[in-house]
Image 1 (tube, rainbow over the protein chains, first blue to last red):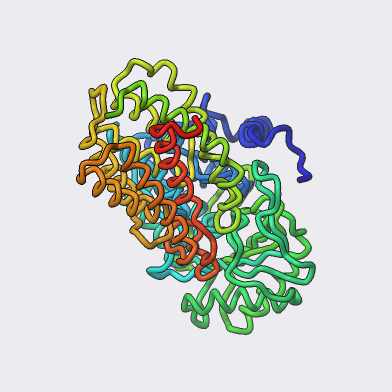
Image 2: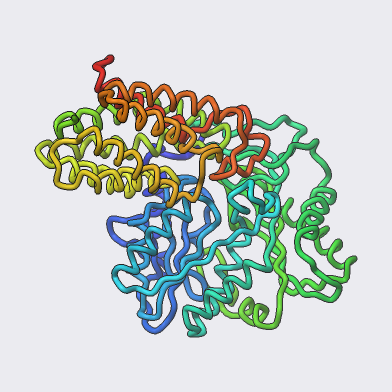
Length: 332
Length: 212
């Protein structure tokens, strides 16, 4: 294992200390916890958004704490859901009296821990609701799985639900908006290499020099299948086709697209994918309203990328356009 | 009958067992999950071990409740809420009691499993810890009802749990992170079932004075 770390047991704590030092205008840490909140929390009279999950996906989620997106991010150990007491601390710190929406990615551990935190908050009369993001089309939503995983589409949920909260909408409305995004967002990813969880010290899986893993997860879990590596345009098409098999997008529909890097893939390669993604969508007469390219939902040093497509309507377009100012996502 | 002193010894030995198997559990998890099971379980039970000393003279319910809260707040992932809920449900059965009877132990085992089912929304055959725990519970209950001691019953139960772990190699995961692998999860044993088996084996070894 070759990593710039001190001790595997301290990576999350030391990372959070570094984030606060880097972005003191945006975030502060709730003492004794792994919770980062907006510097001015709680904000009275607004619904607060709390997200989180295992660490190792930076800038998710602490990087999205700020105006127009999250109020708090809870960081678990690497690829491990945070515990209920931590999520509860986040809820208490950001509740401005109008309720708190938890944005959970669809993983068994995340759901159990966040739901336990929600139960704790209800006992203290804090209004809490949650949504579960499950945008990954690699995994079939059937009785044989615990549903689809939540991956990069989560960023768009943060952005749009965050904008709704910023406009002063009620908890029920912010939840409705978040659910609308979830209903209309799909992602599909692939990887060229695995990643090393610091505590494990070795790669989660091995890939041959000429292989790629399709439909990977963001925790180093293997994908749905393995193929010989292809050219960028072919990879882009394969990912998009899988998404379009799953959600009906008609001619003249408008979409937002997100080309997300998994950590070790250069932006150069993400832009190459983006270029072809535009061509493919143009050929189908699907209108691209908004394009986002970058590393938003990563998986440590994994090389690879995911494509996310969000089908838009007027309400979502307007919320997507509104101001967001966070360390890792700006729309000013 | 299990006294509060013996309960502390059992918990201490479970923590040691988990520590000894940290790498093994992590390895099993790296194949079909996310490589954190051994690390997180060890982190939680190590914390449990440190909390046992001041609990020495407390009643069994208080001891287990403290274990539960420690696991919930320290383990994370799916194992924290599941094992935490299991210990919490068991603790309610023996609230204020300084001794655990044979009858209590059946109820504790039963309540733990019910807690895991309701928290995790899984069932037998989903390739989870339930595939070790449910057959172990059935053997345990039958054995005690036949008039056997806790020592004999738990020894039979851990063997059933082991068979349950072996069974998880033959089935496809349908819950938890391994479920995303579909057919590719077949052939690998479930880390959660394995840690459940190790916990039961550790209880059995302690009660039967093996190695400890």
